[in-house]
Image 1: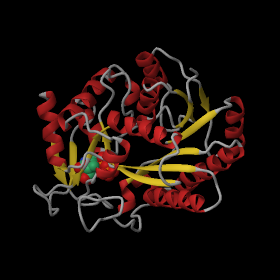
Image 2: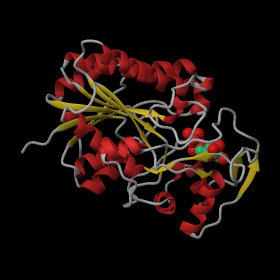
Image 3: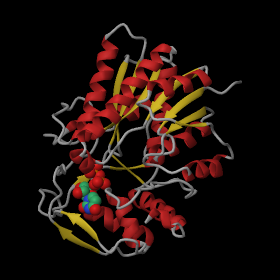
Image 4: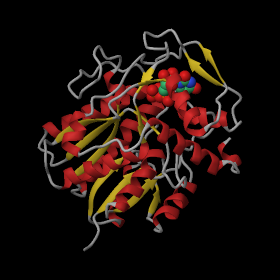
Length: 345
Ligand code: UDP
């Protein structure tokens, strides 16, 4: 039987590359679009090392509708699209709001227009728990009110969800699922793909692994005076492979035309850990100590957030397959596999 073809924008990125692998494992044919603005072609080599396949990859900027159109022309019979391609650094978005609106919102609009032209009707969209702002009640369910975003990045996710809702209200045949990610961490068990921050990492886990590896001097924990068990922020750290699998089941749901024209799902583990607990889990999992200090709070941080994943569990069959320690160990294995590479520094 011919494999169903799924277009993956940002397929060379962190979550994208893991999802390409899981799509392949599930019997789909992924086709990648990436402009490599925040990823490296080495991710494609990692995908090939894992799958034994070289998937077609188009070096295209998703805001460029004409270039996207050419990809759709060259790839007839696309059954669906998973749209990862976006900028994702909260702090940078405050500095460069126009770039964020142009890239994140512009790429979705261009993609939707081209999908409409080619009658491709299934879309999985990368959203974020950032749409919940600072939630009043925990854990957050999909009914928790969406709030004003506290960064331009967060606002792009909120706006993109609104665009998808508006399209769903119209006569459009588009079906979409927005996955609201909590904190993806870890790497493929093969250590052939993983998170590849360019420059100084913004996110906690790559900063931990680079500090443990001696690439960074010291991790700064941003604030220990929050109203949490040990005073550091609480997050829901989900293994990237589990998250990648959620995309595959979301695609399946769309292809079966189940559910409403637009649906939202939280994808986390359902439990929260403090930053200190995350550091300790890393140390336990690897036996490597992390040099850290406590610094001031980081502007814009939400004190505490974790997911209620009942909906994803029941509807998408979502499961968490690894512990925080296992996720940390996989991140460390990936870091070690990069050790010879100067490009990561
Ligand atoms: N964090 C930290 N030091 C760092 C990076 C992150 O203490 O160098 C904390 C951050 O304040 C937050 C948590 O780690 O509480 C997760 O941050 P990250 O940037 O990874 O994800 P976010 O939750 O902001 O999307």
